Length: 314
Image 1: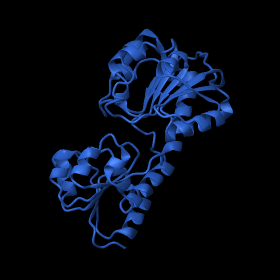
Image 2: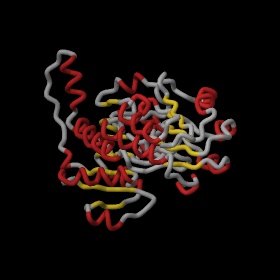
Image 3: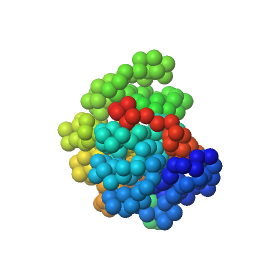
Image 4: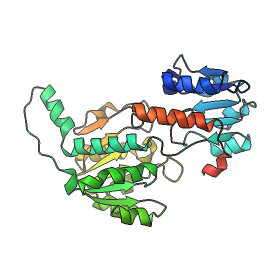
C-alpha cells in the first residue's frame, strides 16, 4: 500500500467503476476520484490535479499550460489508448513520465467494426427506422464475405480486426506506414497504397492515431477516390476525416453507408448528418464494454508504477 503518493483520477468512467476503485485503493490510500462527473479542462483540470504527484487521465487535454501549473505532478497514466490529447514533448519538458499500454481495448473496438459493417451492408438501421415509421419494405443488402475490406492502420486494433474477419473469408487490404509481412502472409492480407485501398474497398475502416500527419487524412481529394457505393467506418478519431466533404458525399450517394463513433468536435452533433439515410453515429462507445473498461483501468493502475519518459512513445 502506497500512503505517500497522492493520486487523482480524472476519468468519469473509471471513477464510477466499483472494481477499479477498489483495486486502486488497495494500492494507494490517498486517491481523489472525479465523483461529481465533471468534464475537466483548463482551470478546472488544474484545480483537480493540484497537489497530486500521480494522475489517471482519459480524454483530458494535457499540455504545457496545464503542466506549468502542476510542479508536483510526476506521473500521468492513460486510461484508454489514444495519446492525441497528451502533449508528449511537454511531458518531457516538465519531467512528467507516462504510463501507457496500447491495444487494451482492441477486441471491443474490432467487434464493433464488424457489427457496424454488417448492419450497414444489410441496411439494418434503414430497415428498422422504416418499420418504426410504419413502413414494411424488404431492403436488399450485401454479405460481408462478398466484400473487399480495407483497413487503414494495422496496429493493435487493425490486427485484431483482421483476425475477426477470417471466418467471413472476405478479401482484406491494409495500409500502414509500417510493414507487417509475416502477419499479412499468415492472415492473407494484401498491403496496398492508401489510394489503392480507397479505390478498391467496399468497406473502409480507420484505425489510426490523430496527429499532424493524419489530420484530415481523408480530405476532399482522397474522399473522392473512394469506390462508389462503399461504406465508411471510423471508430478511431474524428479529425481523421473532413466531415463537411463527407456529408456532401453521403447526400450525393457516393458513399452508401457511414458509421461514426467519433466526431471532430465531440459532442457537437450535425443533425443533418445523423438523419441521412443508412448513417448511424454513436457517442464514442468503441471501448465501452465491461471487459474493455476493466482492461483499460487495470493498465492505467499499472501505469502509475510502470512508466517511461514520454518521448519513448513517439
